[in-house]
Amino acid sequence: MKKIILITGATSGFGKAIAYTFAAAGWNCIITGRRKDRLDTIASDLEAKYTIKVLSLAFDVQDRKTVTDTLSQLPAEWQAIDILVNNAGLALGRDSFENANLDDWDTMIDTNVKGLMYVTKAVIPFMISKKKGHIINIGSTAGKEVYKDGNAYCASKHAVDAISKAMRIDLLPHRIKVTAIHPGAAETEFSIVRFKGDASKADAVYDGYQALQPEDIANITLYAATLPEHVCINDLVVTCTSQANSYYLHK
Ligand code: NDP
Ligand code: 8X3
Image 1: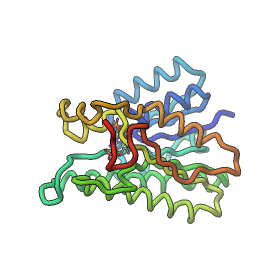
Image 2: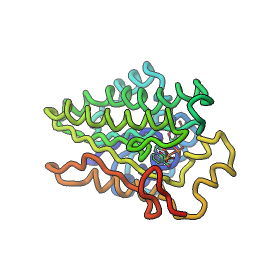
Image 3: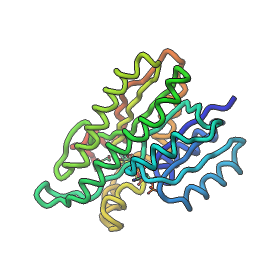
């Protein structure tokens, strides 16, 4: 029987690369995100390229009721989820605390923290009934060190780090593995979203060095997901070779 992975934020960046990498490895994929058109295109492409099935579910992870209703009513053949990748997330703005926008703060915390918790809470019952499962949370180097003007984004990713530790303890009796992967700078749509469509600001983030690519994180996710049953990578910080941590990037 094919294994099932559920990936949030699969319309772009890491999530999309994770979907392609797992599909190529023969996993059935549940892909989610808000942009239904992108989900539909990706689903058709994956099913055409690989001998797998794809279920696409368009929802906003911030919407607690929709998340809960959609996931608790998954078709029976999709309920035996082996891996949940909590990847949906974003940064909005890069402003000093006193200048930052409260709506941006709300969106980051509602998406990166509360959304991750809503999705996980809805998926855990399926894993508990199987007495196994694996939750992979995409954190960030921003969840390890706070950098200037990172305020709420860094806080949200520190929360992902803490929530991952909490899940690992609480879910231990249910044999659910919890892995947190914390990437550094990676070339995705992240910066164009953060800078609200300003392509020159977004491009400048990746100028002068070779940043991580989505496939790098997808391959690492597949590695973490396919270790023997008794082995769990708990916490993994991954940067490109030019980056040491949130502060030191050699251009
Ligand atoms: P992208 O912008 O390329 O992808 C973000 C994904 O999240 C999209 O698929 C988007 O889908 C989804 N998403 C955002 N908000 C919501 C929402 N409210 N509900 C549902 N889905 C949502 O960026 P990345 O691939 O880089 O980001 C993925 C994760 O990696 C994020 O958690 C980010 O914080 C983290 N990260 C990124 C790094 C980087 O440098 N790129 C480094 C470290 C961590 P849609 O818009 O269709 O809803
Ligand atoms: C994304 C990496 O350094 O822009 O999480 O916060 S950073």
